[in-house]
Length: 389
Image 1 (cartoon, rainbow, N blue to C red):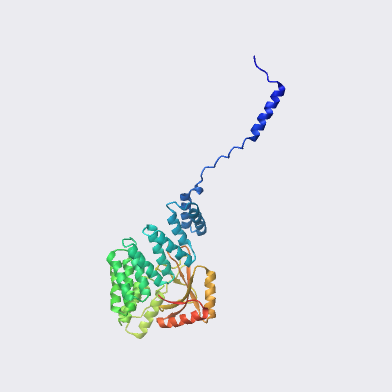
Image 2 (spheres, one colour):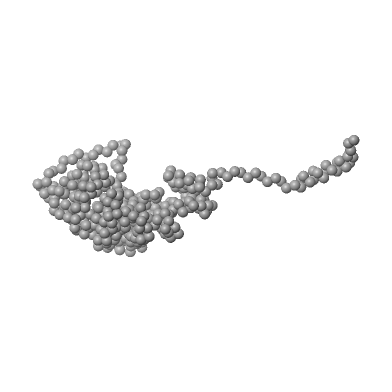
């Protein structure tokens, strides 16, 4: 027989049960599954993709998140290197590269940071700092696969510092290490330029001819022909100089050296009536195709673009900037000082930003350039340096 609960007691029991249920804590919400965005590796991969797509702001944002949220992951050194490369401010970027080179000394990331540090300095024409950075790399990583490239830039820094014989020694080490590496013809061109600078024109000529003989596919043969012609002219081999200029004009009609070559040919023809007269049709550019960019032997692909296109080797440099606002301020200050500025754009592989070098003048000798640099520094209260190209 079933026992019946009196109705009064049944009501009391139900009330207590309801009160007990109400007092229970609410159930915890279900935790969502981790999304790819929460995973550090996925976020780092996405940052690299943004970089490839040239969406640099998104790349920086993603990398900052990676470094902040996943500081102990094995990909953090590479993330920090990429962040340093994305840094627009010159001082900040070089500081970051120095820190990374020290922190990751002996590792691949340390090598890359030291290499990038030298390249940043060279880009800004700070050749003493560049030479010291490359020398440190050579001492610390003697077995690096990047050694031919590093030695080349070390030699180029020394050449810019007028340490011509030391530069030749370093260029030769590029050739000794591996004569078939892509830096070998660049090193030969560097040796030739060093000899030319020392007025050893016959030795310079031999280096330029060696490039033409051994490196038929070198992408700077237009520049080699120009330098060879100049060496011939300095040796008073006017017929050979005229022929080298003619080869440059006919074989590389869209190169930036063509205008100078034409001028030099015409000057030679006026001075030496026995030389053949050049009759040449000007190349007709098509609206669809722009002329190819000039190959360069320096880390940035530097191109003159503003009011002037100087041809003499020495120039006064007022500053290097990544923002056009600062470029405009520098140009305004130069004009106020009584000079006409021009701008050279420079790009470096792996660096997304364009750098702008504000310069003044074109001088045949360093002394004249240094005189203008001192006057500019006095009038603008900004440091001005002499660069040679």
